[in-house]
Image 1 (spheres, one colour):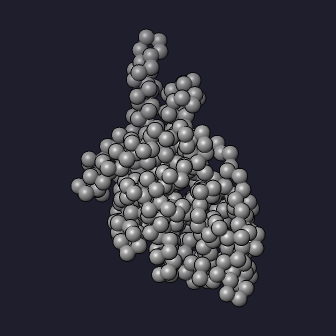
Image 2: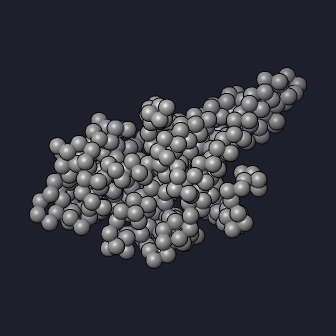
Image 3: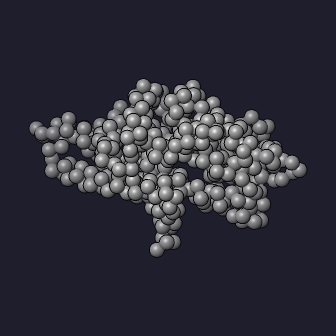
Length: 380
């Protein structure tokens, strides 16, 4: 269980909310983790269950069916899900897609989609990455050509979280191929549109409980009303929203790393070798002590970043630094904890094996660690 009593970022209301989230996870999530891992997807019925419990898109305004809360409530949900070992499928909808639609969508788009995202009736995805384009979003090749009162979308996307379940996809596309970053727009594409096709549910190293897909757009015709915000402003929107996305990843990384540390402590105190527990060896204690010090600093930094974000002051470079620090720390803790498990750590029956596998992609999606360093370096 995460220790949160000394964290000043959270008040009594959030502590009560956290307790509700923990009970929900214990009741509805933990018993399903193995099934999601085996199936490679979260069943659609769970989205409705999460919606009924108020765990989807809590920041959405009450006018659109949400709770109108601040991002700390998202953070609580993220921390508890990550500590429980849940992949990022739910947080994508709550922390990323909902914000795009609420900030840049028309009133009609908000009324059409947000209430059903809050309830879990609609599952969403955002399609940025392409087979030849990852962190450099200016290089996308998917196009959205204006044809009368429609956009015609052509192209393909890859590594799209919620791709199998998604009812609605926010597609990053070039509406003006010769305008560079100013020619990128965000287009809402419903999964029912002719020409939209899902590829296979991709076979990944980790985070198997989260469906990840290829998506194909072959002459997909959508009305101009499906444009999110203004034409040509998509890249600016992406750069603005990436701060919250990267903070969200940092939150999950810190909580997941804490869980890995706790697993290492528990195992090393139970397992005996050469007549004593593994924990009794100085090397083990020193390893854990070093990790605990880094996690302590990590929690303090995370709360600082959250406070900055609530004030609207968290910069893109600060968010990138947070993602860099916390995902690298997560990997360090997971790898060290697995090592302390010895051969048992390589067995899937132990939680640390899944935590280790799931952690690896955190240093890649949302911007690789190398790109995060580039972003931070520009401010030096």
